[in-house]
Length: 320
Image 1 (cartoon, helix red, strand yellow):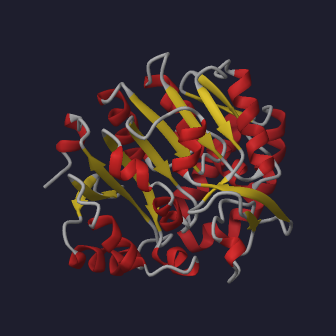
Image 2: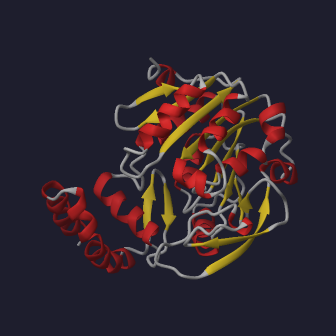
């Protein structure tokens, strides 16, 4: 049945423009959902099994994407750089902020030494339940530390997770909530500095950090001051969506300036289309990036920031 579904979906993907595919998406999801349930609501990620929620459109998208393209995400370059950076810095701590169903977390476990640590952070309780199930099923409890919190710039604040972004201080740490859900959920906020301290991981470690929290990345940066200023080295890969950053109450260009002030060794856009890294050295580069992302299909891109870390050849080869 999965092979038939793949052939039918491929037929439409090859023949219809994106606008038509957007119209067909509800029908594709309606067909895919029972197939996903019959398949156990799970997919294979490298050597690990990842559980999904068939009621959630993101879980469903992961399922479809995995069978269509061999991976639950189309950000192939970012995940490759993420893994290559971990492999090149084997003594690092991996932090997955906005872990969702755990794609990056599980992939990190394939390259991190057995004594290595991954902290997987996901605020949505239903998604977190699937993430926890995946960690247990794959016997990764000794390697993956789970946190059902919202990463922000303060500790202990009650954060509202909603499918709609509202102009409210409670909405600072908006992370993924299923778009077909009208419910709200409340979680506690934590800073990355306090969370790593709680898990006895002093800021003097090296860190590889992935952040994807729907425009609230400036809050995460504000809450990891100790990591950014006292660690032996760090790499941060984060999603940059200017309109979402603005919706969270931040100026996207000012956020870019704050990243520049860290004076890292490298700041670059990860260009998935051209498979290159576009350096961001001055404010004007950020201005151009913000203009450019307006033309991207989803209005977002990914940024890599590195300081005092070993950079793999696969990364260096992508620089101009």
